[in-house]
Length: 416
Length: 55
Image 1 (cartoon, rainbow over the protein chains, first blue to last red):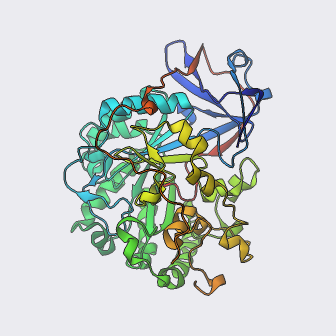
Image 2 (cartoon, chains in turn red, blue):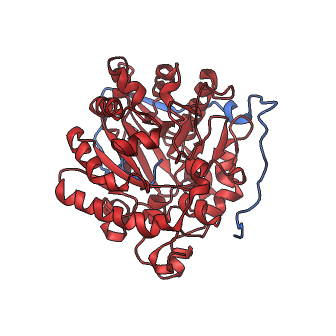
Image 3 (cartoon, rainbow over the protein chains, first blue to last red):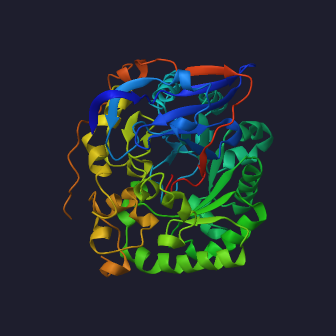
């Protein structure tokens, strides 16, 4: 809710520039937290939270004020935006939420000129991070220029890739990859299960490319979406991961959207995920030096639990960021709460070519409905579950149940 | 299964695309030029793993 009061701190970002013109960091006040974010390119893997009273004295004269008091259950300005640069891909995976196809670029993908304007808007709005996704973003011939444009606006940039294109030409791409604060490499299988998922006949080449990309990035995530076809390969995947040592290994589940919409099955939750959870636990025991994050961890068993119990934001932000701390912009400009919901026309918030992002963020009724869902008032909370898990994420629950307050099947509800 | 999601606000047509208001607001961020970053007290949280479902 917007309330008009006197003298609130503005969310306008403040860039700190060195005397030789280099970006050293950005302060940006967030009304929801009553704190400042601080991000910097030299410590890009962390965001610092700063009380107004602890700001450097040099910053104080530059604080701007407005009359807006923000009481919605989200940040006043998103800290991150995920942008789909292109919908086409070098693979055509059956679980792709974006339903990406092999082939040529679509004519309505963003142009460089449009991206330049979009980055400028996002920066000045107060967004701190941009995550680039496809399709496969390295299918774009102008990817170097796109990264450079985003970085020139003093934004932190990251991306998701399957690694095949940059990994095959790593000498060409490694300088560019190093400029991103994080790169997530998708590896949804190992050996034959990889080849089946990606529709390729050459796991060995893919493995080499993934290895090259992980080795050429500052920080990275090696991600694995669990499927019925690949869950038995989790031990082999971890074995592979241990040889390339990614910053974080992240296990996720299928979101029944896009190309996988018609495949949704209770058995996935009843059989596949419990077995996968055990295999992941075994992996943690066998490879204690690896940092393994899993969407199917529960409650205090969740790694990094301390990140959202330290009180800086409600747990809903951690498990269900949709419309709370970020937005997703599709390559045709359509705006969604989250990428995994971008096959749902009834969840289009607007379009960046026509609509004002700030107005949408503040006033869109779909966002208000999503933000009003808490763990307690969702179906999970109502049945008395105390172990919030990653499956509570609204994208997954809405994709399964078509209900903002819904849930995916679990043991507590006899797999309903 | 009952669809409880609210109806579409508006379906945007790709046809007739023009430069929209969203792109036209172009105020600049404030900037300060300093020799070095001053020290300040803060608490840090990881970005890399900030959300369970960040893709």
